[in-house]
Image 1 (cartoon, rainbow, N blue to C red):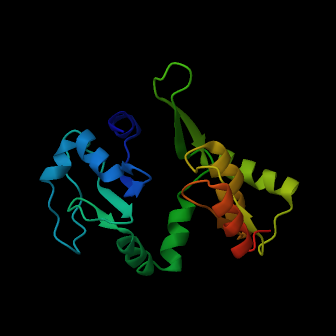
Image 2: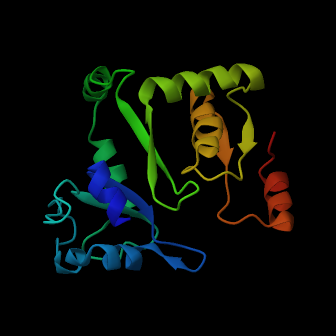
Length: 189
């Protein structure tokens, strides 16, 4: 984590609090001990000030954001409610196809982290083109067992669903019996 934060100049980090037996907030405190010194009163938007990670300003948590250095997802929803269409259009006009959209990290065959950079244009075009092969419709409810930190999950499911306005069904852990129940109860198409 520290390697990625150092080399990607991440400003805003979105994370889950836990998954399976992994406590991601505890891992962040291990990688970034300065977080333990951060105290930002409830409701404040004071940015993080970390010497070793000078670009990192906010950490938002899906789940329990019990740490004083993090913000819960409700802070994002509240901030989004304050934005109007003109502001969003102005932000959108600042983005061009050559701008970086994401860096997907892989350990490859040597276990050293490698960041594959993907631009706005390449991801949006590729996912748009993939939709022509799948013929998704806005009313579709598609299931994906693929994680979004992997290109297949990010491009083939998440972005494809966003292009069409589909519902994307996901689960934290693949379990054949529970997955079949999810597909039936959510009426996956």
